[in-house]
Length: 414
Image (cartoon, rainbow, N blue to C red; front, side, top):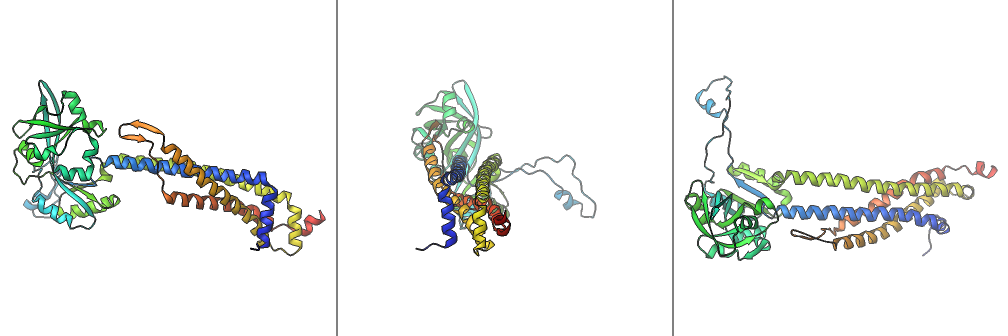
């Protein structure tokens, strides 16, 4: 295939200055490979921490929130235009249970964005083993639904969680509770809530989430046992946990559920505000570093093309004297920048993938994290080549524009 004359000249300039071309391409290659590596590391760690946050946190939690007294009661008694001010308002006493919870669940399941729903009875308790006491929380759940939503099986270190549905008065405890109370599978533990009677429960399993606060306080029972602990009837439910098909829609769906049900709907973003803030800060830092790397690569290309113009100034003058227009000369030098960007970009993508793959095999062995979390996200590679080429075009435009303005008469006479 016959190349355009501008393309032939551009390739000739690049081939006759191999060292400078390689140096410029390596600058782009380094910037793009670091772009891919850092983006892969950032997305990999973000995905890991998001997954960890969902180990025990649903996308949305629906519950009855304690409310502070306001002026509505005064408005109902004093029906005039006066300004009602309530001094030193206090929290209102209200039932923590949800009204008609299973009707709410049926209503929630009609939402096409909802993937799974499960009820929970939460009871603050005191664990007793011998003379040792420990405060904590029992979550009364349907353990099969809980496992589908939060992978309870993956956190088990002893026993069988299915025993919650088969064994009367059974409990699944966190590793921290087991360590502090010296408990093993098959041991008995006394569990007492503030409003119910003490209950002797049998430990049928031990789990470890690697989240210390959870492992040292939380245990699971079936819903009926949790209701018995609180002295409540079978319709008593304190929480409804909801998982969505797309967890990013949780804030919007939560607001919709609040409007429909009248209860507080806490989405996972609100429950993990510090985590999301850390994601944003890390993204700003990494993108700043990547931007600096690509900027440095761009300056390298700018300098090399500038030097090429100074060295080839007479040849440029001859080209223009032979009838090459300003845009044609601009095309010659801009093509050089594009080819440098493409060469560096393609090699950078390969190097970036190899670095990412190599780092993903680094063994960490901390908690549930075995290897360094890395993401092989295809859009990162497309973004990398686009950013690399755009950077080189921007770096090559000004030298190319300078070359197009060369006056052949002045150069040849001089």
